[in-house]
Image 1: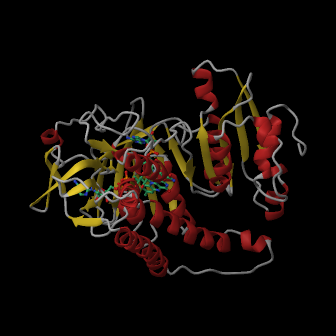
Image 2: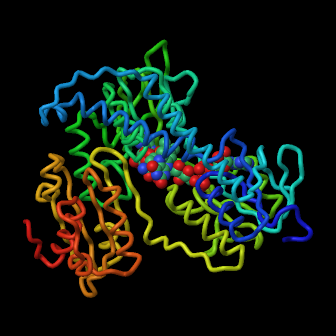
Length: 467
Ligand code: FAD
Ligand code: NAI
């Protein structure tokens, strides 16, 4: 135990990065405290992110399946009615169970929860609700919040122009929801409200949805969402918004500039990205600053420029994903305890939980070209996968990108009903340095969606069986 400090480790923020770091540090025998200003633990992910969005995606998908003809395909007649209050209550229950679960784990592992906002006084001292707390090592895990859009003021309480937090808590199904930003949040929450009956229009600055994902997957996603009835205004930007009663009037122009047009909506969701949370932390008092993107820079071991201060999760560079934050939480605690904590940032999967799901890990075909890599690509359509065919959910494909000389798998991209679960196999394979042939010669249970990954790996050498 640190002799001159209140704690061995103090973690600021109890999101997936911070709470996991706290639990691991305590498991390793360090006297640990975690500061959280929110009324419940779990951060963005458990309170207003991953968990409530997935709960509503699940509930809305059940409603959609009953209403859109999927039930009828199987001879099941149903005329569903929606009790939105009940759906929201079920979401709230899931959130409460999970945030309460973290509180239980803190108690079980003897992690002290310091309630309040933390601000640095020096590199070893933090002020929490007027009290000075000292620690030998401090981990910044303060996460991120919504990037504001100039001219479009979010008012979650007013429930007309909302961010993701407001869109998870509407008390009526929008007549016309305009989503600004065709990224992950826009497509997930746009899908929720479309399934429940809203007309949805996505306004996206770029010419394609889902920046950062593989080009083939982006093209397919656009087709799929259009077919589901989402209207798309690609290559457009919103320049202003005004609210009058129940109507929001947006001014929109082409991204490259041009004549403005107006678009009326009953509700608007602003989802143009997130930015790191460092306001009010008094980083300068600890000798720290942020980079041009507002992030706290760290080295390979998650250490900042001040040796006893560390950073993890959304507040540091890298994808803003819960599982990335969690893995960094484990690694940073292990490094602080004198062990070797490592995260392989080349193998961080990303999943969009729409229907079908969209998932990827590693590099895209475009990145391979940019880097001058010589690659082979194998693709296999879900249409030729027997389980997808049996389930009547044949949209999408699996794409494997492998090094042309060594056959080592460099990236896997999937659009399929179960893509989010299927991508885990690709992660394990890549973590072990597998070749496409390794996946192709691994026995996969039949009939499963996972066989499509095996066949895409076979397709890398041009020899899938079922195509
Ligand atoms: P956070 O979860 O943001 O937690 C940081 C915590 O620190 C917060 O609770 C905050 O209150 C607290 N805090 C900040 N400053 C201080 C301070 N000075 N003092 C005290 N406390 C402070 N990711 C996925 O991987 N899968 C998903 O399905 C997914 N869905 C999402 C859906 C939505 C709608 C949103 C918004 C995000 C989603 N994400 C998802 C992203 C995911 O939520 C984040 O990547 C993840 O929460 C980051 O974890 P973190 O620990 O870095 O920060
Ligand atoms: P995003 O970065 O995924 O998408 C934002 C989109 O908005 C981009 O397509 C961008 O081109 C567009 N855009 C930017 N400015 C614009 C403008 N002025 N007008 C129109 N379009 C504009 O960000 P998003 O969806 O807000 O999500 C934030 C973060 O949360 C992401 O980094 C993501 O990793 C995380 N997240 C992860 C989820 C998951 O893993 N399933 C779910 C939800 C969020």
